[in-house]
Structures are given as structure tokens and as C-alpha cells.
Image 1 (cartoon, rainbow, N blue to C red):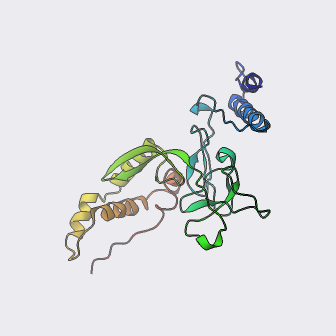
Image 2: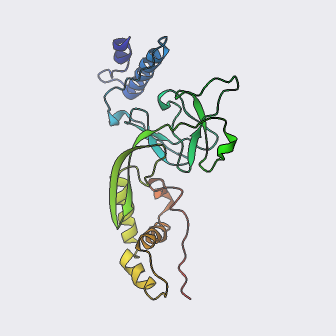
Length: 234
């Protein structure tokens, strides 16, 4: 069954839609493996990013799929999540995959499908535990005026940018905006209150990225970079 599923996903010379066939073959392979009685196995084919379809119009951030190869839209509030090997996806930042005990009294397993809810949910509302469906996530943040990138296994994506290229692109726009970190520090130095350098850097990012054209907004985090920041000196 493995060979049949893989061969169905090969690209024919000169044919169209090769990556669609590859995806179909992969899903068939996964379905066959998961359908085996008493067997739960995940087999990921070698990663070929050229066959990944870039997620578009995501309402939130993007996360890596279960095999750590292609990106997908993060699941939003009240959407399904988790399941066998996380097939139902991972929740966006600020949300967690909540799995409640079955009504028939059965115990919760790591294969249960959950629902994305706010992280500040009340523990007393749950009758059992809420397992964490982790994903291997790669991304970058702007720290001290530089793009710092890493790959970690976590439940929620802590990165503002999915790749170094998008991070560097945003950093260039910030520098081109005309308000640098050093300039803002000079402005803030006249204040009688102590200045937090990390807070200032975040403020620089917010001030400059508010000038970005709408057509480029998809490359930046939608939740953190669309707020206008005003500096008022009294």
C-alpha cells in the first residue's frame, strides 16, 4: 500500500498539477496507515517546499503542518484542533486546544479532537486535563534591531515572522520609515522616567510599520503591526 500511495503522487513528465497529485498520494498513504486496525503511524514523505501551497488570506498567523514542511493557517477561536498527530491543526497565538472529557465517561487520549479557546479559560470549567498539541515551528523575531530566528516545538507560535526573508524585509521597511531606534531613544531621553530599551524597540516597530502600504501588509503580523502609535511629549 505504501508503494501504491507514493506512486500515485509522482509528477508525470510535462504533466500539470504534480503537487496536487503528490498531496493526494500523501493523504491516501496517511489514511491507509491510520485505517489499519489497532495501528497509529505517521509517515512523512521527504519535504519538497516547491510543492507546498502558500496559505493565503489567513485570519491569523501561519504554522507548520504536521510533517514540519508546509505552512498552513493557524486555527481560530471555536475551530477544531488537535486530533491524531494534530491533523486538525494548531491554534493561533492567544488560543489553546481545549479537549473536554467525553460525555460517556471515557478517558481523554492524545488523539481526541479539541476546540480552540482563549488561553485564559477557567480550569474549573474542565472536568479533565487539556493536553498540548505541539508543532515544530520555525520563525523569526526582531530583537535589538536584528532578526533572530529559531526552530522550536511549541503549542503556540511565538514568532512574528515565518521566515528570515520576511523578517529582513520588515526590518528594511522600519529603517526606511525614518525613525530609528537610536532616534527614538534620544527623544525619550528627555523624559524624567526610566526608559526600557526593549519597549522602545517595539515602539519603533509599531510606529514605522504603520506606514506600510496595504498591499504589503500580508508579509507582516496582522495582529501586532496595524495599531497606530502616537508619541506625545508633555
